[in-house]
Length: 80
Image (cartoon, helix red, strand yellow):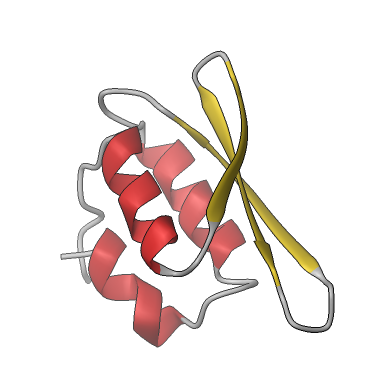
């Protein structure tokens, strides 16, 4: 069973920026990322900009992002 990596908010932000998400807003330590598809649908994710993201929160971000990005593309970034 692969193990969930320990990632910071900055590292997670870089991952999603590489998938063409853009920073839409920031309120406190939470960053809202948005990607607009060619058909006009908006894909939104919110990530905490913490030094170290809790495992449960990181797992939730991963699961939510699977709605927009395939598991094959994303798994290597989050699991070792």
